[in-house]
Length: 208
Image (cartoon, rainbow, N blue to C red; front, side, top):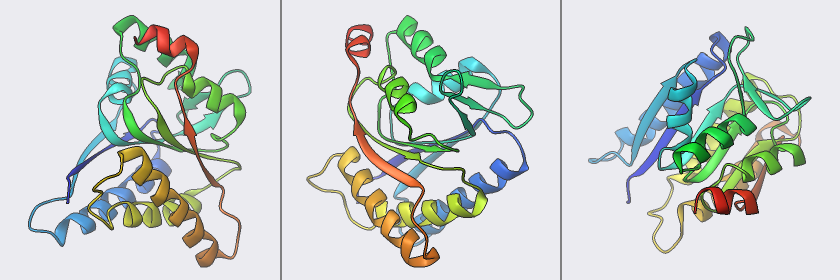
């Protein structure tokens, strides 16, 4: 099985987000432990520093999993519970363009409230270096919704060797399976939505 790289980025910075990320790490550890060779390399970044956050966003990986509050009342923004850390997608796109590199990953899991709206999709497209599977939410979510979906997603993602398909295609298949599992387990519609996003015209020029 090809080893995959997962980047866990905690911008939320409070006990809820810490617990959610610890759960994801535990899930990935359990997946790794059954193999002679680990199937996942996991980078965990928990920071208030904009440069550190930008580096995590633009690092090459198979899955970029971001956990934070999601807000788009003004512009799509990830923020911490205490309000001291706010990282807008517009800000990320501009800083990434200055460095000449955008988000380069197979999938983005935006683990926060209402990150699947049209405004978020448009903002993310301005930060992309290539096509990605984007997983966002259509509603307010909490710890329970996040952990139910994420456990199913990562379980499905690592179920096969991934031969003949791209990381984005693997993530999309895993997300679809996680949606189905969520409905089966909770008897509720899944708040996590999956879609394919491609770089905007602005991003294609900025990261050419």
